[in-house]
Image 1 (cartoon, rainbow over the protein chains, first blue to last red):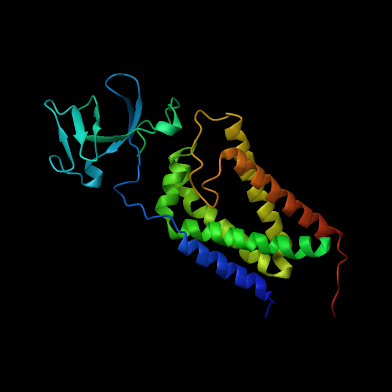
Image 2: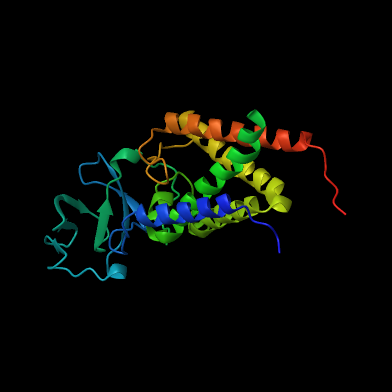
Length: 111
Length: 142
């Protein structure tokens, strides 16, 4: 049997224990952002990364409300986050304030 | 004193570091994936890295347990730390179209600049340890 130094094994166990104690809070599929495409806000000042609400089982009238023509939706979590998706698709958009503007097109039509 | 520090302390520090960082990611893979999605590379790459990075970290830590595989573990640690250091340097030099948040991992409260110095220090320690091992005479046991 190969020799393992006991102190290294203890440190490994300490590392695993510390990882368990300090593990980040679990994110659910409702707060992870898997973007489908991007779009510009109605006032043209911000880019939003967008994903399909129906894929996450959001319910209109409960999780969000849309104004006539269903182009502008507001969300109970953040009423100020209203926007137009321009296509009639119900979407939730997350504004990544700290990440700046994405002009690469990487997120376009991504699924 | 210096020999003990290099030969004993560096692998021990790396075992603790890589076990902690590897298992932190494995215990909360969705949170780690969320962090990866905020980095300036395509999502298909993030989907693969989410398990690849912690697996590599844990594999390196296990390699450091055994005398026979310790050199390989140190090379692995050196490669991983160098790649991460270069990534941070690229961020700080504005190589990417956006500056991602430094919001994941063990040093989540550090800025990218502080993160870079910590990584340079760790990489330096690993390189010193590798040089020290290369200089050691090979022992033959019958």
